[in-house]
Each structure stands twice: as C-alpha cells, then as structure tokens.
Image 1 (cartoon, rainbow, N blue to C red):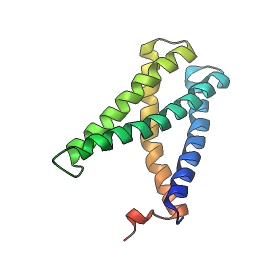
Image 2 (cartoon, rainbow, N blue to C red):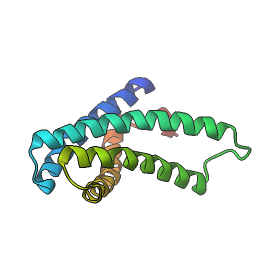
Image 3 (cartoon, rainbow, N blue to C red):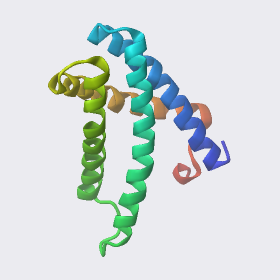
Image 4 (cartoon, one colour):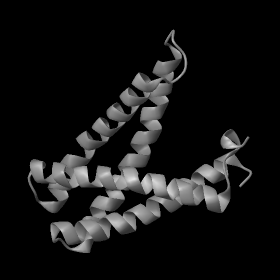
Length: 141
C-alpha cells in the first residue's frame, strides 16, 4: 500500500474489528455473560484504546521533543509502554466492572487477560498485515 495514511487507517479498522469480535466472544465465554454485554465492553474498549493511543502519543511526542537526549532508548520505550498501558487500565477496569457488574478486582483480572491477548494479537496481526500489504516505507530497505 503506497499511501501511508490509508495504510494506517486500514490497519486500525481491520485490527479493531477483529479484536472486537474476538474479545466480545472470549469475554462472554470467560465471564459467562451475554455477548451483548461483552460486545458493549469490546466496542467501548476499542474506542477508548484508539482515542487514548492518539492522545497519549501526541502528548508523549510533545514531551519527548523537549528532552535534551534524543532517540528512544530502552528506558524511554519502557516508560512509554508502562504509561500507555497504565492509563488504559485505569480507564478500562471501571468500565468492565460497571458493564459486567463485577468487582474492580475481577475486572482487573479480565483486563490482565486482555493485555496478554493484545500483546500476542498485535504481534501476529502486524506480521500478517505486513505480509498481505507489504512493509511501510519506513521499514523498507
């Protein structure tokens, strides 16, 4: 795909649609809840995650531009990941608890399962996406 903006949009839309289907089904099974309830969680989580990623990365990159040390070493990458995930957990756990009518602890455990799932899913999806659509210009030699 030659246009990087179109590539990013296709990536996000396909990624999120698959995630919504998988998460709503898996959460319905694990939580023993109706798919309608877990579907609401999956759709809301997706919308929150996409919005949070955009806003968080915008803020992080603005902060990063003020640093004397340039580049993204291990410490900065770890901080980015931990802060992003921490913010997402803070937003999703209360949503999960409310929608599924469970305790915050149980909602947190469900969210931990989602974190593990999304770590593996993102790796596999990105690999498959790159094979189908080719590497982005930034990754081609």
